[in-house]
Image 1 (cartoon, protein in one colour):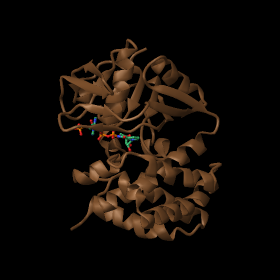
Image 2: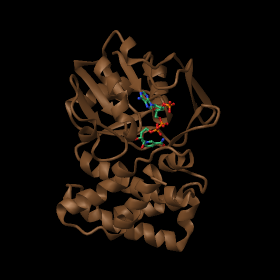
Image 3: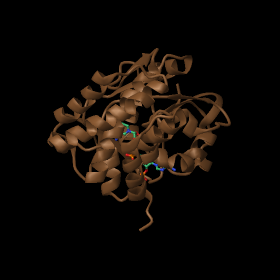
Image 4: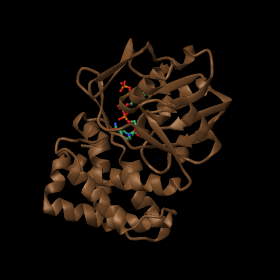
Length: 291
Ligand SMILES: NC(=O)c1ccc[n+]([C@@H]2O[C@H](COP(=O)([O-])OP(=O)(O)OC[C@H]3O[C@@H](n4cnc5c(N)ncnc54)[C@H](OP(=O)(O)O)[C@@H]3O)[C@@H](O)[C@H]2O)c1
């Protein structure tokens, strides 16, 4: 199977390393040229040989499977890679947060897209090494395109589940991402969830998200929301989140796919979202300015 990773950042490097250990030589398609990718997982270091290609016009072959792991804010600019890499039979596995991966990707001239829930945290360290902070795991919908991903990562350090109720799993992760948006506003890591006021705000916010999730078909309840708050309290206090890393680096934030979506879909279903109505403009302004 021929495979490409478009967006060899924290998540892309983890997947590239898993593929490489399994015997594949993934084509690495990025924005910044590099000779190799490095993943640290506990005491293991996996070096994936490059180069990281940076010109989609130089691609001379299509692939069976492409992982798209750019930020949602970068998808438009990465489109040239997908146009170059996709044949009609190509599967594009979208490794992005949110519940609208296929919609955001829009029309693919060739190939079919399959969304994935990315459950693991990974972080690029200042020296460019990616550190995996948890067990690598993806969940995909139970559909034929997912089998290609299952085969590509079989036996690797990245587990792949397929779910007959992908909508619920995607919303479970979205609720986690929505809560993590608070960290981008406070510039604080997971330790902040030990504050009782933040605990209460997070709980109220997730209670607001739940009816929207259910209106979209997710089978989630109050206990699922409370489990997410507990999970944040259980994280190491220095555990960050990719939206906080983007905020600290002054990069655009994925505020719309992680938080704005709850407000947008709430409006569509006639569900009030008073907490989102405060959080979303703050996140949008923090991301996009002006000022
Ligand atoms: N990191 C996590 O723990 C985590 C966990 C779950 C889900 N996610 C989700 O996974 C997705 C990827 O996140 P990430 O943390 O891996 O992001 P990231 O580390 O910023 O990686 C994005 C990569 O895409 C590259 N890129 C940007 N524009 C490109 C273009 N036009 N063509 C090709 N490559 C391009 C970037 O290149 P440069 O090196 O030049 O910036 C970078 O290598 C996001 O939706 C995120 O929310 C992340």
